[in-house]
Image (cartoon, rainbow, N blue to C red; front, side, top):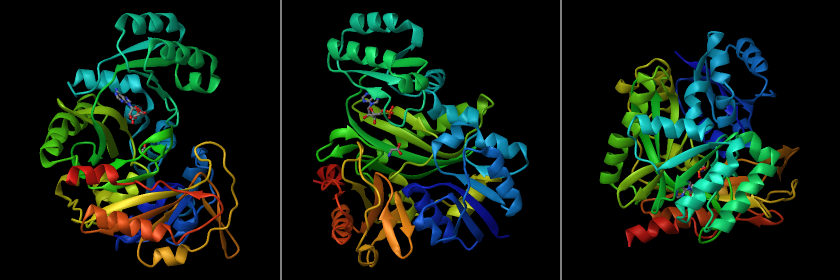
Length: 428
Ligand code: AMP
Ligand code: GLY
């Protein structure tokens, strides 16, 4: 059978997923909603407001879509999967209640506690109880300490104060910020974990899982992991910090009990599961779960996939992932994100992008914040393009990505020069 697929999303992650799906012999037609100029080359972009779940349902019915793949967290946490399933449609992604693993930090923490999944010790407080939270921090008197808004906050809900004064001023900010308060009717206070961060990804069919690679991303805007947090400035895969032993521990102590625990609780997990980890001296611990693929981690893992992505997704929807091959190649991939100058703060849009064809001669380039106007390609967001180098060594993959990114230009373009350097340190 061949499938008509609707992919939801418009970032670099979705261009990478579209690229993987488009390479499948099982694909009939691919639509991406709303998509970007990169996904438009692989199928058709659908003009669709994806927050309007009824409009998505109508599109599926009009275009004879056989299955829908949801890229970003927002529609998952808002229950798009539940809505479409209730209408008899097949959707790859967790239902609303399962997406709570990302949608509520407290839900995730309580779940990990019930299933003995290693993570930082924590205590949760109600929004009204900021005084109790302040007392707890003062009594605990150990810094740094980690303060998190409970709900989705677009990466802006975590604060790591180094002392009491900083902690108290964050609590005040939380109290007074309506946008953060929306995300944080609850506040989670966590022990600070020391170690190196990495991510391991799994695909899940509700009953079983298979690992689909690991990666390390670079969240800060500045070199040497300095400056503001961003959606991600680059990533590479595989991450040498995730040794065979670490991966075994992640599967045994984290992924398997997560998938089994969700199933036991009548909340089976179907979709990509992103385990954000701290590799501590006591072994890997969960920093956070995300209910979707990482961005830009997806851009370095999907190109490594030797198995058929669409076949993997179909097997998850049919509950027979166990019999399906999920194999990655042995090469390294390094993704450097080209951003608009000023991101993650304010930046200008509409700058003409030049040199993309030259870069594409020897690398993969995934679009994110771009827009086409006639024959021109213009910037249209903070993260603009994802340049993915490959090589037999991590160094070769890094060099390949940087050689290509230097060929692309637009006014005030910015990228970090040290993507992958963390990984090279491990390789000596
Ligand atoms: P989160 O949104 O939960 O992923 O947190 C954002 C970032 O804050 C993570 O990528 C870590 O760098 C850091 N972080 C979160 N929780 C902890 C923790 N318990 N210990 C140390 N760092 C943390
Ligand atoms: N790269 C981090 C994320 O996707 O959340």
